[in-house]
Image (cartoon, each protein chain N blue to C red):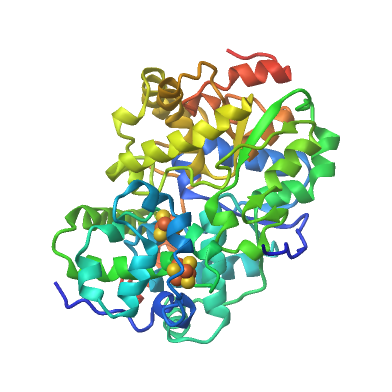
Amino acid sequence: MYATVPKDMPKDDYYLLKSCQAGSWYPGIEKSLRYVLSTIDANFLDDPKQSSCIGCANHIGVTPFLPIVALNARNISLASLSGKRNVVCNCPTCYSNLKDCKNILDGSSAMRDRALKAMEKAGLEYNDSITITHVSEAYLANLDRIKAKAKYSLKGIRAVTHHGCHYAKIYYRDVASGNFERPTVIDDVLSGLGAEVVDYPERSLCCGLGFHHIMLSPDYTRAVTRRKYSGIIEADPDLLVTMCAGCTLSLDMCQEKVLQELGHKKDIPVVNISELMAILLGADPYLVAGIDLHGVPVEPLLEKIGVEGTR
Amino acid sequence: MVPPELDPIDERVGPQSGLNRCMQCGKCTASCPAAFIFEGFSPRDIMLRAMKGEIESLVMGEELWQCAQCLSCAARCPRDCSPAGVIQALRIVALRSNPNIDHMRMIEDGVKVNLMKTGQTILPDTLVLPNDLLGPRTRKRYKASAKHRRELGYRAEDSRRVEIPEEDLEKIRILLRETDYC
Ligand code: SF4
Ligand code: SF4
């Protein structure tokens, strides 16, 4: 077992690295993230110049690594020069992909030289003075500020969590709480806000998305979500909390059919950590968190928490 | 189609990959959700064949695309190898050398168009969920997603609320061209 290396979690001055998956499937996650950071008065920059990190195409295996490194050399430089040097990623794949690229760019290799040559051609200079964290780590670092401003608590809520594989299993030594087999970053945030976080078998299993699998080999998605939910229903939670738009998509959209097949009658709302934080801080669940975009209705959870004005 | 050869500058098949130290213990395969589901798929076997230099049979095979990139193999490997990284590098070789994977080349082209046009890899219409994964209520809610997207201030054609400024898109395009991508 690897010991967790304690790491400094920056509390402020964030450069928000937007995710094209979140923006495409659950824009409420991104809106919630901005809402949370503003509400707790954290300084952050939402820079329109930032490009996609190409992480998902990197894993699907349809984009070579060199252009990916070059585009992220630009993203890293933008953040470095912005004055907001703590890059906070909305997506675990952006998080690990950016770390991969930073490592290449800070080393010496033919890949690095070619990426920097392309930067030169574009009239850009490589500049790296950034830190890279996932947004769930930013919430953990700011738990006190969130608690101080929260309008609702999670008292009496049984929750299970799913940490993204690309958060826990690539830079496994960097997991901020717990370890890669059992990351507890979201768990800590939720229990800090009053929830009872419960374990379940298959906690570290993939969400079933597999990027192209959900479209081209749905048998994979079907089998994995079934295996995952077989474990989750043993814990009988009120809520499943994720940290990745892709995991949210797979676990949320496939749930109805899988639970039906497993003979489990109760819905389990699936929410991303940013959406949940925003709701607890008083955001409009529809117009900020975007809960209408979810496959499983989130209203039963909101009623339990005491949020008024649900449709 | 070009002959299947590993890219010498791709570090995922370099010393970090573990292709010089995999001991064939099988811990990766035991951890692998794809091996659990697809008969015959095994990251350990992929490592062995790659170490033996069987690049051609690997890039021609279907199994290369069965990996879900969960990275459990790399996280659990006692020798710090990354079958997942080796698979990523082999997929890029396969795109150039395997005539039977037009469906993957379609994704490749779609991503290129998205990146050149908007600086985004995924756009709202890039992924369409297959109907038979969804229950009836979910299907109905999923169908209404374009409308709810608009309510949040996001457009149907972009994953960004505020698009990347044109002069920055131009820089992005230069980077993609200068790395022989587009
Ligand atoms: S776990 Fe590592 S050493 Fe063992 S077979 Fe897999 S790649 Fe090789
Ligand atoms: S990354 Fe691929 S090969 Fe490795 S454990 Fe996950 S599915 Fe299996």
